[in-house]
Image (cartoon, rainbow, N blue to C red; front, side, top):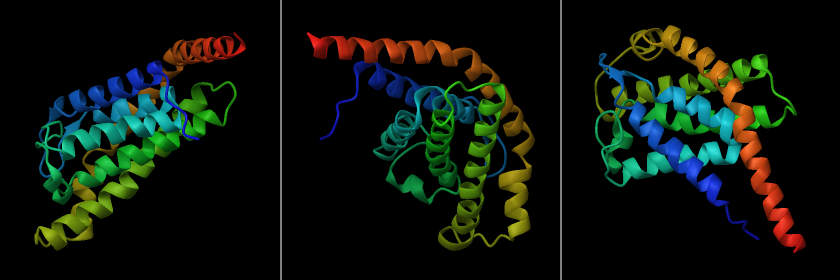
Length: 197
């Protein structure tokens, strides 16, 4: 039986999908891979929404872009899968889920749990994005590029800033976590009360 997601969960999924889209336009133009603030909302979604809803928020964002709305850094449409940076979007979805999964394993997550989870998420993003960047440039875009050049473009150029954003997002998530948890707990208790009635 498929459970219907609560209205609150749907609102949170939509909100973080929209925030990720907004983050795409807060950017610093760089060759091939622009630096954006999308990753902040990926980290926050993972920390605050739980694994399933965090993944859903990123899938909604990716889906909206692939159907044609210009929510990605360089537009939208199904052909965006051929863009060298599409691997980052795949990494966002996987990272959001994994961050949420790690936080869900801890009954009362603390600062170190949030920082650890976001750093794991950061590793996942780059583990997907850098090989995708290499394949995109060398195979379907026919721009012969060495691994060292791809590593410099896709990793070295932004890892320090992204690491700082991971830590900052984790610290922010720690402060917001109780608010999101109390809202989710309130919703669950309301549902249980309605069942008893």
